[in-house]
Length: 154
Image (cartoon, rainbow, N blue to C red; front, side):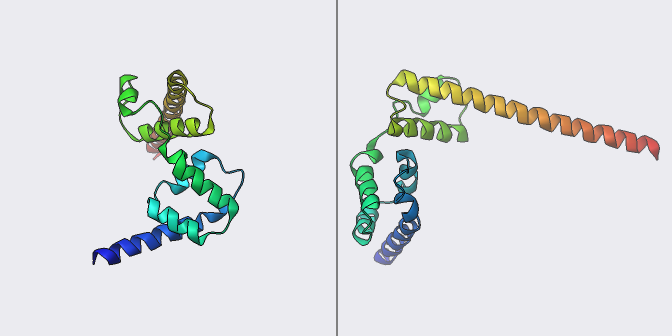
């Protein structure tokens, strides 16, 4: 039974990798995007896919991923985000992915740059939520006013 499950998992993973092949073959693919496409796969999945795929660009991406990219991590982690006063939640995943992508792309090379990016993204997130909440409040107020007017006319 265990082999059957493991084999099915391998087949499913290689199938997902095959569906991602056009993206992996794109020479303009950013390392961060490649990591997102390959992160779900186990080393054996990647090895098998590499044997089945004859595209040189895909082979290059697989090699970079297995030798370098998958090991690259930002210096900051969830504890650091909490220390900056950012409440736990889905935003942590967004911020940590952005940090990793920055490291992969070479746009971030220090902890100070990581903190700067986190503060900027957090400020943008807070501003976007504030704007969305303000718009929602305006819509609610408009609906209340319309209900009040309609109520007075009947």
